[in-house]
Image (cartoon, rainbow, N blue to C red):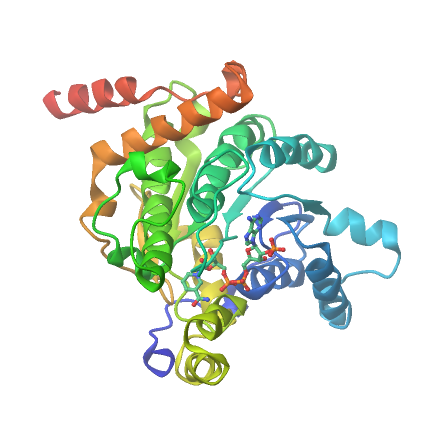
Length: 362
Ligand SMILES: NC(=O)c1ccc[n+]([C@@H]2O[C@H](COP(=O)([O-])OP(=O)(O)OC[C@H]3O[C@@H](n4cnc5c(N)ncnc54)[C@H](OP(=O)(O)O)[C@@H]3O)[C@@H](O)[C@H]2O)c1
């Protein structure tokens, strides 16, 4: 609950980010809008926003423009320079692939990748253009493709631009605990496998287990990689809290307008704020705690900036490896063998397992 939230970090502690570049999915609405606003207030060189709705981006831009301390200058060219918007539907593998060359037009470095966007609980079953359940496709598959294709840029940031590290921040949810099994064969079902209300919640929960597994498997593959720069990429996941954003409007379609509105109102009063949600993301992006000592890798935090345990399913290493390989295979079937050029590929699952065995017997 919001009033009892422990605050281990606050947005005002974000340091000056001059010269840094961020990519954020869903950075024009809800928690993502708050993250983008903070990055701008801290003088980031560029923050590239990926999402579907240009309309939401335009209204966010209007809000940011009204806040002079964000330094969003008036001329259209300057705005496009500082906060470029790239239309991208994360549930469509082609759309994500096409977004990456667009990102590269704006920058040759990326210091922070916020995998923030997410489809919420959906009352209707939907599948992605490539036949994967839509919520999982957007929240997990789209982000894995994006991270894989952005890897060369992350490596260059360390190897060529001299950055000490790159941070990847993956948004999950406490609702991941509601999913007790992740059967990969169900990810391409043509319809719901459970009663309507339960199915929508379960599919969202399943996708949020997927985001934690994604963060953890990416971490393992980076650590096992022969490329030294990969060892300086820190990937962590977090739960932003219970926040009255557009995601909560779904309860109106489940329970009717009045009860749905009351549920959202309840969380607006007793839940966390968008600032709380953004604070944990910013903590993972800028805090020296993340790189200190052995560093924070593959961790899961709750609001605000407090380490938390995940469900057993989200800690299942073989499942994480299997899921990464499953996504990789699906994307290879869609985009072809060469979708990730050699410098985008990480060590494969078998290689990670071998390295882990070597490390445990050493
Ligand atoms: N609110 C909560 O209580 C809560 C709790 C736990 C976790 N979360 C997570 O926090 C993150 C932010 O959610 P929020 O609460 O800020 O919700 P929100 O206001 O609905 O924002 C969701 C963002 O994701 C983008 N998005 C959704 N589907 C997308 C797709 N297919 N492709 C690209 N972008 C997409 C949306 O932009 P477009 O619609 O323009 O694409 C929007 O910017 C999500 O991952 C959510 O699951 C939220």
